Image (tube, rainbow, N blue to C red; front, side, top):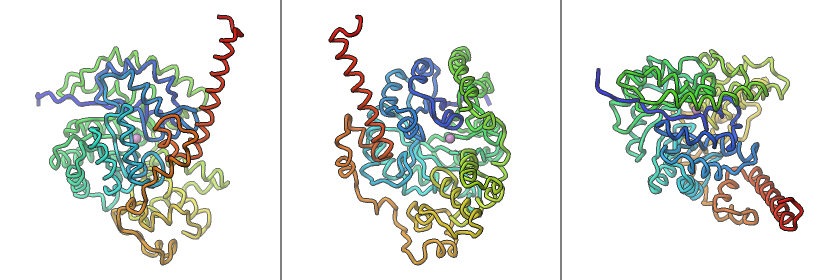
Length: 468
Ligand code: CO
């Protein structure tokens, strides 16, 4: 085979890599000095926004996420910017009205996003319709991501059928989103081959190193014809993050898949991030535990992030000794919930319910509101039916909805605008408020206080209080 087919790379260091390894704490200030160099590499795209970055920047870094996006766009003139979007849940944890979804997509693109990767935790495509349509309307690239998972229902036929539907929906590309690192190398050959035979739109592969197979999986996927792979610069690669960019680039050198990237330029970028990695290791923000191979993720099919959540929930309850019982309960709850994938927010919902089932000593004796919502159909349709006994025990005779869940959510922008108008400084503020009302208001107040400080210092300067 000599025909050139360079593999494309999406760089995740500004989003998934730090979300996976250091709790999404990389600040805008840390990112900006290196964006111009990242822009020179020739990446397919730079994933830099969405996912947990929005919440984390408002909540922990006291930063305006919209401002971050504009600043990155300012320095990345050539490379398309990419974000991760949770379908009808946007970047939050509940289904929003269609008007909020549309407005969020519109503003994301207006502020600099080129590619929107949209997924649903149940792979219910109805939950992606509004976001895809809005993205098409704004001339963005709408990528639909399939949440990859294992189970009886997830046959090659399931994946190819859903891929066909995605193409028909008007998506521009498909991503296989393997958040737990469950896709094994030879399975990747089968899956990618089948998808390439089924659809014409490009196929991208996103995985995590958690289970230790990720770079082998990429190798097989690229040989099978995958168009794009997601990688992270080495200082924030491996472990719960992605395979290292430099390693994949070197692997394909001199082959038909050669990326043509400049290793010297990549080395300069790695040099920039390495001291920060050391700093994070020293402060404990980067836990070496997250850098090894976690074989439990293959045994229990639980994403890495979910494992650490379970540990902390059990710690809070003083029930750390129940860890393995909970791990074994997770797949059972998942089965009761129609064998759904485990990704935000289903991973949290299944995880919390598994903890309750074990800690209470009786399954579904204590039930979360989210569990009831899932079993009432409020998150959408699962691949298999819910366990009818569990459903009855949790929601009784309450009505189960079968329509697109957002059809029952009224438009809400006007109400939201009215609630937060006193804080509004830019159009986008209402969207921050829609997603995280309390966190956003705290941030607006902080922003105001900062401004007062600056105004005061300017006034002081005018009065000659400061030496010029
Ligand atoms: Co990911």
